[in-house]
Image 1 (cartoon, rainbow, N blue to C red):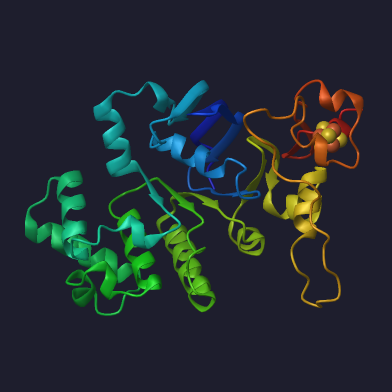
Image 2 (image 1 turned 30 degrees about the vertical axis):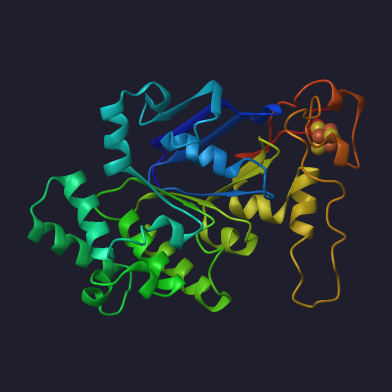
Amino acid sequence: MSKEVLLEIKNLHVGYKTHMGVSHVLNGVNLTVHKGERVGVIGESGSGKTTTMKSILRILPSNAIIKKGEIFYKGKNVLEMKEDELLNLRRKKISMIFQDPTSALNPLFKVGQIMLDIIKYSYKLEDEEAKEMALKALKEAALPDPERVFDSYPFQLSGGMRQRVCIALALIGDRELIIADEPTTNLDVTIKAQVLNLLTSLVREKNVGWIFVSQALGAVRENVDRVYVMYAGNIIEWGPSRKVFSNPLHPYTQKLLECVPKLTGKEFSKGIRGRIPNYFKPPSGCRFHPRCDYVLDECKKSVPEAVEVEHEHFVACNLYRR
Ligand code: SF4
């Protein structure tokens, strides 16, 4: 894996305007993906994972406010890109696979029409070449009988097949970064593994960068090089996947990993007490402090800075600053 930086998010702060005021969701997110690297992002629902991913492509809802921060893609700040540069980035460089393949595909059009529109618009190809490209992508996504899928409406396909179509769309052309936001959450348990295996093998084969956002900790552990742990709008721990999973440092990461059911079925975690904070009035300092068993006075005063505890393994927690 190259150490050339593909994506770098720096100190990103994002909030949402609502009728109740502004919710302060992202609180200084930092995240890096190298060329061809597979990166996982884990954390509870509501921790800001999807907001971070949507910020990369600037597809946040209209009430979102990017208050501070930078997102560099190959050295260029996405947040300052003009419309045509941004469209080029979305059409040819970065693609996103969403949680729900049903809402990702327009039900009024056949799969082929959806694919042709995207390919022709992005690559300026004639009908025949575009169709060839679409069928090749469907074949690569292991869809049996690509011609039939091409000629079907999304509702005529199963959930697993629809997500394979989305994977085919995401990998068309020479993409450099694929963002998969909980790509298997809405699938049947038997299909989840098949879709994930397909996605990971295509990502490896094409050597593209990959951000895998998931709450399926086992799947993340198996399939990424490095992992970021996110809590309440902050990245609180990151490092090589095997180090973070075998030696979790942050009290939140430790609790999160304890929540994974054991195969023996003998021990059940009590879970993490409390809940993700209210983003309208988030806790001061370390946002985890109301739930932490080790809270110190300084934890309530300022956001803890990250320290490198072992090679390339970082944690943002005051317990490691002494
Ligand atoms: Fe707990 Fe303090 Fe570490 Fe936050 S910084 S996780 S409150 S010990």
